[in-house]
Length: 334
Ligand code: SAM
Ligand code: DTB
Ligand code: SF4
Image (cartoon, rainbow, N blue to C red):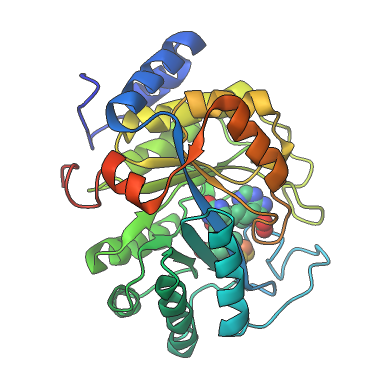
């Protein structure tokens, strides 16, 4: 395969063979693919805000917000629009180009959507890209979000179809694929990835990546999260993942989805600078920036600034993104 080829027909065995490569060979290939598609020294920066926290009816085994998990998290109602816009303006002032709003819902009601649409319009008016993650969507809800000008919808596959049942029982893997299909058909850019370090095998990581890479179009954004272990969740105390395995997964995501932004997502606050540098070398080119993820702390912003300086990385602006990256519809086969 040439470094510019984009495929949608990967077998799990082919992906497992990539993951099995010697580390140096894998990183060299991933960095070569990365350079053919992106400026290697620029990183897209998003900021997260939990707009509705806790008391979620789903039973996701990793999540602080599930009502089934006794994590001591205080539930909060949907935030007022003004509060959301203040947080978005602060994120913009700190250099973020995208504002991602997350809600602890199984799915939004149509009334919920009215309120979220006000937030999306307000954030867009500040000149930021918008992303929301609200749970499952019907096709008409996705169309409403598209009409409101939403840029990205985040909905993760989380893990492989084979391992999925050990993590979540209240909705199926197929439900997730259906929501992604509604998002795609509505013309909204897709943000979808998963979580590593939940006790899954390397084969499960290959299988999850095959699900993402074999979608009819690759997600424009692929968040790779390292499990943030939250006390009171079933996955608290899971065996730590070998950090090189995390880097390998980023590298393979980069090779399989060459035109997508691969986000070094949750878990950075537990990572060394050297590990994060390896992730950028492997082709990660997006992060969450700011004090918090949704309910847990993120890497410190001062620390991130120093890290970027030491590595000679810069934040991507909306303008540089347009120059260095493929738009959602132009460079990928359907
Ligand atoms: N409730 C919606 C849903 O699940 O679709 C949206 C919010 S949910 C918190 C968004 C994603 O955050 C999850 O799908 C999962 O991939 C990620 N996530 C949640 N808790 C996490 C944790 N402790 N560590 C890593 N990622 C996590
Ligand atoms: C994604 O892939 N990771 C983000 C975002 N999409 C919504 C969420 C990470 C959550 C980490 C745990 C927390 O802060 O609650
Ligand atoms: Fe609810 Fe989303 Fe957490 Fe699952 S990941 S419990 S759906 S907030």
